[in-house]
Length: 340
Image (cartoon, helix red, strand yellow):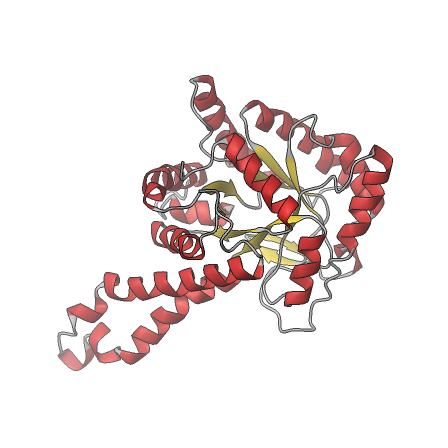
């Protein structure tokens, strides 16, 4: 069962929350980066989440027509085949989808899974993200209600982002300011609109100063202790302990202490993209610099096929990214926690 069933995915998330660890959610843009993510999870003996953003799906769809649904479906189908060779369980997820791309990304993908479920199969993806952080909270939650109902019917978990994450991610941009902190009132309104599981399970990307992109330590002020306030504020009203399954966005450069605090307060999924992009590209750059006169036909020479063969530098790229994934598993305490 390398690709999680709906039931197994729910079990994965429950185990993470109870054990106070989280799954690295690795953004992939190719079959090669998919293998790197799977390899990293396998080497860490950790289950995990592989995700595709709108930009990643567009890239996967090919530059001739850049169709996001085609790209996402194709990689998901590929993953269902190749993941069988890895001794871990993974869930497939789609990352940030803003309002203007719902009709060309998340809604069609939910329909694909709904058709599969109607035939007695499992959904193609195990979860999808609705990023309504650019909308008013009222509009965000209204759309969230519609998507949650459709996702639940297709045995899919929905991820919602209710308040902004700073920086830029696939064209969605937010300023870095005091609005990057979710309030207890925001969380209460979310629970009132989406329920706490009875209307369908969802993951909550709350903001505690998170920023997408690359920043040196000290440039971003994270307050992961805020998540405890949200859990307690909503839990007190509804009589539930730790009612939310939180997602950590914009985690590149976070300290070990910040990550640990987030895990203690209900984070079960942490997105990684920036760091794994660099880990993939860095060995390629090293190879090109070291083999400049082999990868290029300099001064009329013929170059060296063995060093410009994409398989040569591609293997190093996969290894570099896989190593970063294993580090993420260690940081998030998921190492050695695989289901089987």
